Length: 171
Length: 224
Image 1 (spheres, each protein chain N blue to C red):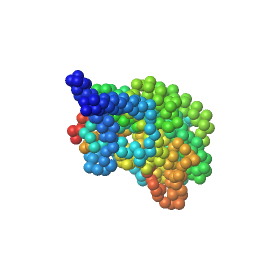
Image 2 (image 1 turned 60 degrees about the vertical axis):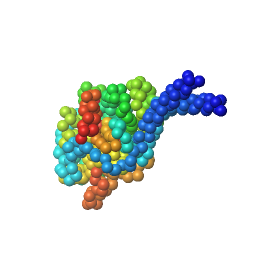
Image 3 (image 1 turned 90 degrees about the vertical axis):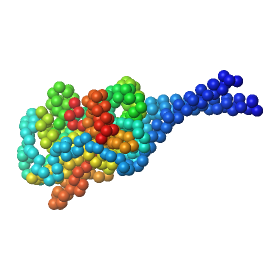
Image 4 (image 1 turned 45 degrees about the vertical axis):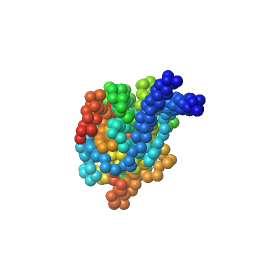
């Protein structure tokens, strides 16, 4: 009986450690190595949450100079507020993921989750995200389950972004 | 025996630490859109300015890549104008260059010329300065004028926000269509709707373009 208990504990211990290892591995794999390409219908659920956590979804691209300039601001915010949920939606092109995007992210030290949106007929989905969005990027959505603001501009600095998040939460 | 208990307890506690992490992955799957959120707007398209459909667009005097000043009124017997804000370096602008050339070649003889304006022209940017515009126009053999919006005075009047951004004007310079050229920037072969051509056909038939306003992903104007 005692022996059985030991075995049970050992098994539980193994499962715990194993799942921890898997978790660590999957985080590295999904967040850094794999950049999933979505169409609009697939990405739409990522633009909503049922949690209180602040989410920042930033539409950007390597070819967009103000977007690239803004990335360090998002990075700085994430470092200062680790509980924020940042998603970078790249509007670059799938054929450039391996050749350009991954080296770019590595060089810039971007560790936020990056996905790609590839859905050519933007006129059909831009309004579904925000009727007032013209389609120019950078474009950022700040939201949790209750609040939501849209920003068709680049944040000037960390304070600017912090202020907008403050305004979003206290509106 | 006791140490094992403690070890087990620690392991158990550690494992519980992972739970909140894995839960965040599911956080993203929220309620479907439109469910009791409170959208707050920072700037509307109206606030961004620019023409509404039906407004008369301003003429201008801008320097063409041939060094001469150009105005819409220089086009004689025009039935309309395909004014497009575009630039040298934006990948979307580049993807549409050949289609702009084709548009001009087909519709200029019918009275609708392409008038390309670079809202990002900037002498301190070697990729978007006037010399670079001249080179791009020569390399691509643009059959249309390619004008420098020096001082960035014209694009805010039109309300150009991204490149390329088309403003189709009728004979009286009334804005009849604002938006994108077609529904697939990346692949001309996969285009299903040619918005600008459809709008020209509508004008030709004395009708109002439908749709008269479309959106697209593009590079922001003032991207320098």
